[in-house]
Amino acid sequence: MNEQLIKLVKHKYQVEFTDPTLLEQAFTHSSYVNEHRYLQLADNERLEFLGDAVLELIVSEFLFGFYTKLPEGKLTKMRAAIVCEESLAKFAKECEFDQYIRLGKGEENSNGRQRPSLLCDLFEAFLGALYLDRGLAEVEKFVAKVVFPKIKSGAFSHEMDHKTALQEILQRNGDIDIEYRLVHEEGPAHDRQFSVEVSVGGKVIGTGIGKSKKMAEQRAAEFAIMNIKK
Amino acid sequence: MNEQLIKLVKHKYQVEFTDPTLLEQAFTHSSYVNEHRYLQLADNERLEFLGDAVLELIVSEFLFGFYTKLPEGKLTKMRAAIVCEESLAKFAKECEFDQYIRLGKGEENSNGRQRPSLLCDLFEAFLGALYLDRGLAEVEKFVAKVVFPKIKSGAFSHEMDHKTALQEILQRNGDIDIEYRLVHEEGPAHDRQFSVEVSVGGKVIGTGIGKSKKMAEQRAAEFAIMNIKK
Image 1 (spheres, rainbow over the protein chains, first blue to last red):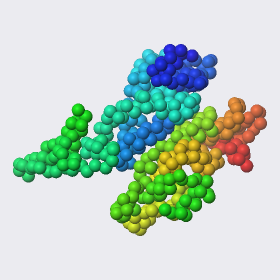
Image 2 (image 1 turned 90 degrees about the horizontal axis):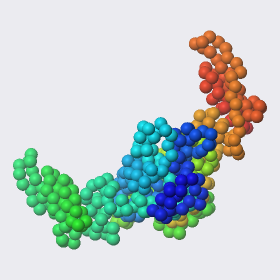
Image 3 (image 1 turned 180 degrees about the horizontal axis):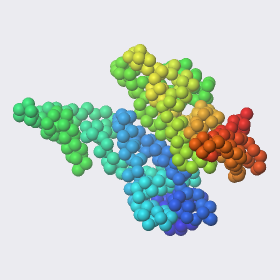
Image 4 (image 1 turned 60 degrees about the vertical axis):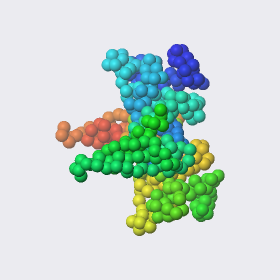
């Protein structure tokens, strides 16, 4: 049993396993099992299968509750951006999980420890193990520490266009009328420029210029978000 | 509120909603909302987003526990065969959900009520609504009535090859040695035939013939499964 790993998850994330062999299994890559057949170990692949679904639900429920006005299509896009190899590999590294996975020599030598797909699987396997050991609520607590803050800070909001993002920010506490107004246009037809103001309750919160009205609106919303976040 | 729908889910599935408006929302298609804007209704699309993830987890956990020897890749294939448009549309029809969804006229006239994607979304939206209203355990009870029996009866086992399926069936209660033995081969090299017997504890439980040893093994396993199910 890797005592350092047990300490890491306990002190950094307040996660304690009732059955630490599940934690160990989550950190056991198939290449390690194959090189140590006499130990009859189980690898982390089935745990990954389960953890993937656990994370999908927890993230879905969070997005559903956090972005109360966002339509299904946009929620699905955001979920896909969060529960994907690249993102989960980053979370695994942030948790320092890469330091603890048991790999076979071949995998180690080919830099497997840094491979995004392997790290993504590891992160999911950890969640699967925690789910089996402690249940959904405990996994959610962990995800709330590691994943939710990134969502809240807008790390995945590039999946939304700026107008949608602004609407989400402003309407979180109830319906608010957001108004986009074309205030100016100039130039010849083939090179026209549009100026748009976005306002809430009569107060202008952003302006934008673009080659179409739509583009100017997006810029105005982007600018308003920057102002709000200041 | 549709009293018949409330009765249907209560009597057929012992499902009672604390907040029946959630049930109603699950059965409200966007086309209906669009045609009745003055009612300011919410459609079922966001509930579908949530229900999809709820079902994914429940099915994953079931497969994980039921097929204890199945590797991750095969579990993933089975899950995809269960949580897919075609299957979920069938479940929705079996539950008679198609009779209760509120559609706009255009959708109704173009036979939307029988469209698999619409029925699949409806089924997921129902699960999402139930999850919000009563929590994961209640959704699991419902899925255990509607979906699990189909999995147990092998409705999705075509996703496994026959040898894997036989192994799953026989090893459910512990490790058992399954032996495949080539008992005969004949014919010229370009048209050879192989006969294989599969046995457990020395007792032959199936035989198969094929153009390769592998094919003959698959046939023998298929035959053994048919014998077991008799």
